[in-house]
Length: 302
Image (tube, rainbow, N blue to C red; front, side, top):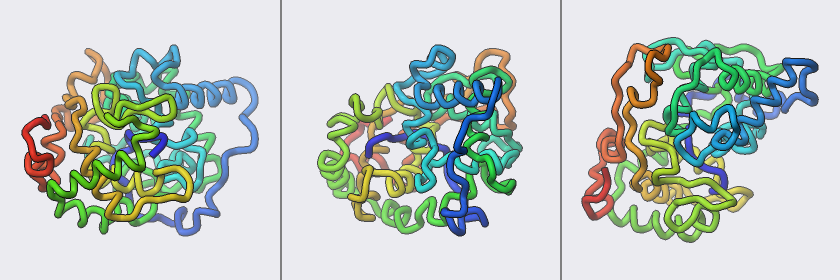
């Protein structure tokens, strides 16, 4: 579990034509575009890799995460479960969460509120345009295939969220949580810290410096599939039960609550019909059908 969390990008779709053979998807473009466009692409790449410290984006971030915390290697990796390759080709796309059709800039800006636990930047501002330019560069050569169901990349496989992992988590108990803790200490803590606080090698996975409860990875199905496709790095993958159990453990830990209105700058333009949303660790477990007090064996989750 080396570069972790966040949003993901919330909740991913069925396999489309582009994903039938991932080898057919384009690799990263061999060269940056010339002139001002190339400079904007490079700026977007820099922001994606250093979101919480870059001078243009750091004041918009309320965590110690970057876009690359979820989008491994800046989303350049074809095999990653959070690749940006081909993402630009699916927009505009409908999002049930916002109740509207989103642009790529909308989607990116909304991640700042959730995965970054920060403030939504203007969609026509330099940060949003630069990130969109970078993602579009990575999508060069991808056939346009608009997504009427979810604002996410068609390239994600049909098992995201993985139905087997979801079924395993539906039956979680305190024993599941305790085993997940063991898996975390054995396979994750070396990079992410014993208390999920992050290290120089990898970002925090819970706590005040991580994503909030409105982020995709704070929801059990998304976190489980993200771990399945990305962690730990290399070939030493976790077994399905280990993935399910460590997901229960990680997502049951404290993280900031999400209140949509607190993440929108006053007077900000926000493309959505859903204008009131509240999420907590407790509500995410309740919505999944689990009693977090029984899972944790205590009353400490909020």
